[in-house]
Image (cartoon, rainbow, N blue to C red; front, side, top):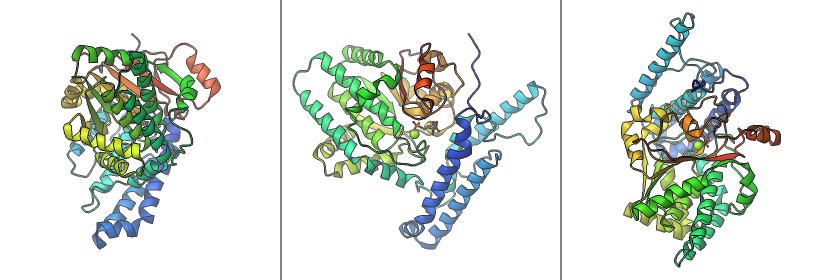
Length: 453
Ligand code: F6P
Ligand code: MG
């Protein structure tokens, strides 16, 4: 077996890591500073007077300084806030620096005393996660503004811009639910499973970190777009996914649990809720556990606050199918047919092959599932350790021993790391679209059936 390849890093100018550090991250941070500056009087009024004004000033200063640190490639500093995960982060930072020292020494270089992790020298995934935790530090150093979500407004605007697509999707889902009140042949279950899985997959195009906060336009019906998108699906393990659930539902009757590790708020979250509804309606699952983030993350990721905001807004939407579905979902949450939870591990820099040692409680929780669906690009990067894999590497090999339960990744490609392709596929995609790996226009549905718990 060949050696595990090195992680993606901005030290390679041909990697998407490089323009991310050089251009995308500074833009994301400038947008936050602009937003806080423009909203100053509203925020100060909402959070209470002079103290809030001073805190906001400090936050703006901290985020501007962070931007400067990235652009000038300063080393990562230990976190200063007292949130419980800060200790883990600082231990992880020390561990990474030690590893780097060992590597430097092994290759005969003098590591020196000033060794640190740097934006343009070290693992992209690690540095990018650290960036979002540092943004959180800027809030956590405040008392009145400590739970202020600097990306909240962007996420809410993205949701509002998707009203039309949301209405079309929920209208279609209502029709499917009505159909399932009568007898439906198995072929119909399979057909709709493919649809809702793929709607949730392509919902992942709508991430605000890649579009630098530019809200997507939703001009087309999300259901009718699926056919046109089909040939951009590079790996399609839908049948394996369906087989796992079909068998579990047959064997376990009413006790099938599916976990959905969420990615972005806005339209993508609605597509995930619709997929979960379909799983319940079709009896492919009896219980769905959603995993959200415990802090604002990668601009648009769903926090528990976004979850509540989204459901409240859907219930209030002036659209019958949407508000009725939403009330049904509130019922599922009360009855614990659906659960939503947030674990700090999702906002650590660890790759998922480290979950069983770094966070055994979460690993055990996932092990109780029948099928775990990981949404989006960042989850994919963590599943496959964000390495420079040959695209023909098997998905199972890239998971490096992470098998809590049968799992599936629904991911549109937004970084130069992909596995599971057949010979010639990468070249054909490249010929058609030189941005195929980073634009969110190509996708994979990758499944691993193994369970080693
Ligand atoms: O690769 C580009 C990027 O912005 C990454 O920073 C991150 O992995 C990802 O896209 C975010 O996308 P998603 O919301 O699909 O995880
Ligand atoms: Mg995201």
